Image (cartoon, rainbow, N blue to C red; front, side, top):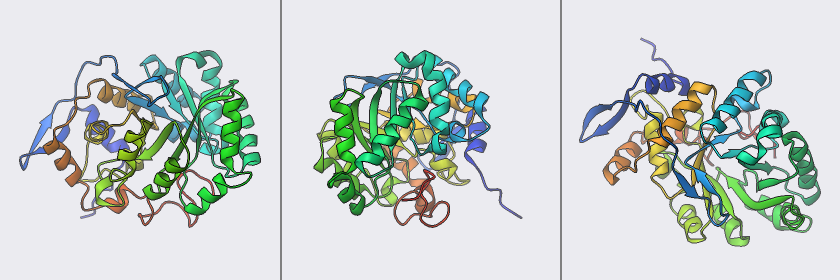
Length: 333
């Protein structure tokens, strides 16, 4: 008998049918998915003064793929209609495709969202060129947040903070009023991000966090507490890990995964969506979120104990993604 490999889409169907499973007291119980959807709660995005909704839209998945114009525009517009007020993208996502899709909507709805993008270039001049391109594609004259994209190693930090490094571009852009706030992102090695936020006073940090975190190179050990101490805006990503966090006999519910992350002291979670239906499911989870008990957190966490390197494939030493030398953002460094 061949076991079926489950994907994120399979589990979206499970959630849509109203069966979000929690394993409580050693017995499997089934909770009905909520039928109603209220307004999503807000949390402060660190010191920025922006109150961000619990669910935010990520610029990957459908938004970064070519040939998805109509689907992408529908997802973005529906997200804003449902109250999403933070959209995150990057110059590297689809090599401009994601920013182009988002920019088409920003042309008429820019004032409704806190808009964030990223530079994957580690130099001043290269990052400034990317910024100019980002502004053009996003059809805006300013960014609310500009971030260093997926900082992985100390060598990259040396380039970023060295002479003519990317940090000079970020500071210059903020001084000139082109960007309002500065951030750093990463999902490879928490120690690198710890060093980054101890080196520079970033406003936000975008970090990986899902129920597999504590089992393998955890971001919750040092990085999350330090970011809280520094009163940073904390954005969580990799909640479903491109579907790899879900497995038959393990974690099977997006509601469990997202509720687990939102119970931590994060400002918001960003998730890339494949369809409008998937977006609506995620917004509904956020709108109906209730913090989990310590017992529920432990039980959900235990569901990924047998496959942490798959559920956290994006970390150093993880199961890997794509060809050697390429990370899941689609660019080489």
